[in-house]
Length: 262
Image (tube, helix red, strand yellow):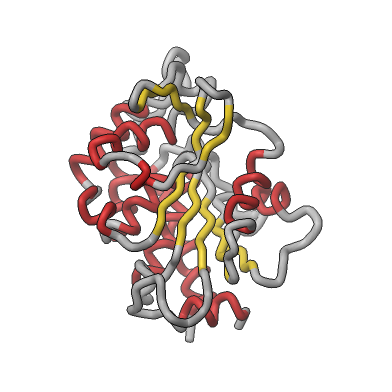
């Protein structure tokens, strides 16, 4: 078993920060509907009593609502919502060219049906979200408690306001935010945020196979463990067929269980 996994499992049913002398962080990637794989892994972490085991969680795009569900203790509800309630044209419609992603619909649905925002803000795990500050033209990684709890829906909407797919911006305290721009360096820089945070152990979860190659073209550091789908596990980020999403959810969940099997 990889040392990162051993160190994570040693924190079962514990709440970070602990006195083990380690800083363990989780790095999560987006990918729209491929995030069903991320949800599967987070559910396995929950099953093993690891919901509060991480000192920090770094997210971008669709990983932010998934991590929010995880840290608020609602991850078991999330697969059904994603598979049955968000896999239709009200949320994603590529023919609705003026708003292919309806991020406002996503926010309203999640905050009303799933998320316990008070419990999320009470978590001792720090939750970071990558955002593009359009006023300063800089990439920022605020921790959610840098904002008021009433600003959370705006953070959620901004994280999913991808260029081209969701036009316009989201204003939070007068500042315009958007999802991170799609660049070759975005994936590497996202991991860099966690790597330079002083973390001793990093668990990275990818939603499609190519993501890992974008980040670790020169190899994976020793203090990092990656969970990524195999190249032949095909799933489009725009998939809206419930049966297909459910299939990939089960495959990824079984794979994650094999990694954490004691």
